[in-house]
Amino acid sequence: MSARQSSSVFELYAHEYDLITNAAEREHYHQKEVDELIARFRPDRVLDAGCASGLTAMLFARRGVAAVGLDKSRRMIEVARDKFKLVDLPLEFCRGEFERLPKKMHRSFDLVVCLANSVSGVAGRVALRRTLKNFRAALAPGGHLVVQMLNYAAVKEGRLFPIRATENNGIVYQRFSERRGRRMFVYVTRLDLNEKPPRYEIFRHEFDNYDVDIMNGLYSQSGFIDVRKFSDLYLRKRFSRRTSRDLVIIGRRPAH
Image (cartoon, rainbow, N blue to C red; front, side, top):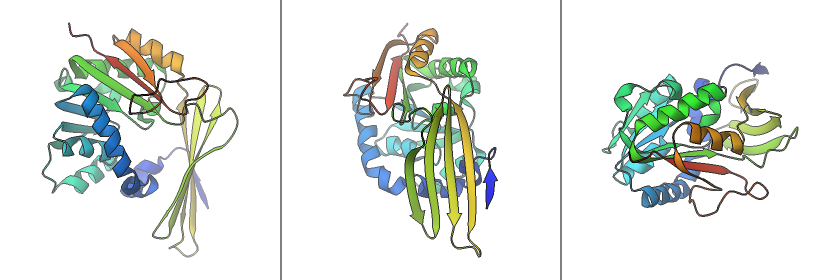
């Protein structure tokens, strides 16, 4: 058994990301979520910030929306490019960090999405404020930002919260979370039964635990208006501190 507390399982095993996250199973209902975002915001061009292996960006492109997938992981970008290199869609991928978006992206998108806890990888409020300002800069006037925080209200203080267990071709993954004050921990175990003896690895990822008040305040400080909070990507149910499991927060760049 080996334990890795600093290495990212998603970097080391980027080629297995779709298996870890059940991408094939999620594609059908995630397309419905993407369709709702398209219907609500009617974008011509979208930035998928934290695109991982490219599923969300591809689903936008499939509907004719020009999509750019951005991720800080070089290996993940390589996986995304390889997956869709033969697909004739308005789709491209680039490596980069949220806090350092290139100026060529400024005013380039009608919609920026940062889904599935991708924003949690931003370390600290200063970096998060810089990230939100960069997202605002990437938007054309009147454009919208959508940030999703999964299991936001479901993970209780000091308790382990099971996320998902998957098995594919003899490799078993388990994911679970834990909240400790202002920090969130995500644990991932990987058991490869194909090796003799089986290889067992444990990964721990530590993040800042941004609460709804922090996010709401930073949206406003970063120049977004019409900030609203929902419980899902269909943007139909308002967020409730008591009953909502997930948090989706949207804001608009002013038209002038």
